[in-house]
Length: 193
Image (cartoon, rainbow, N blue to C red):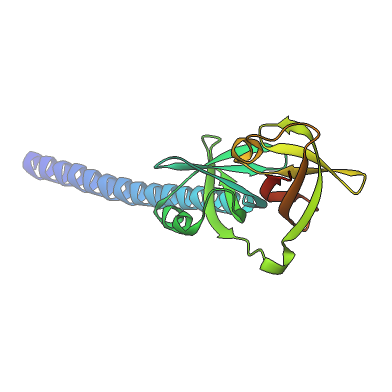
């Protein structure tokens, strides 16, 4: 009789242990499933936040800073944007000084990441020629020229080359383009003797 009681007691203990392990395993699987679902929701939320943070802007391509980033001149200064494999290939057809439209976002490290970049087409017929009086240099990228008694500001990212040998008060001949915002980009500048 003692043996039967010990055997029944042992059998009950084994059944208890096995059912406890099965319940624990089921609870653990449920917890893992819930955790994965929560992580996926967080990832989707982060992806949506990145997509929602995308901005588009117009600027002038300054050049490649290094293999992983480029610099673009925008209305309120300069931006350095990180490249990925896709955008690295798309900048091959863009030259310094080209007007561009670009899309970017700010990543978790507060770095601007380039999503896409497109060179703006400037029609040849938009180029204009004129003569005027060279007033002077405003900063590294812009000068002032008086045309028909109106002072106008022109920009070019290689301005030092263009104004070499030209002094204040010289009569000059210029070729330039004007974008939709009214910004005047100097194409050529030559002193008239």
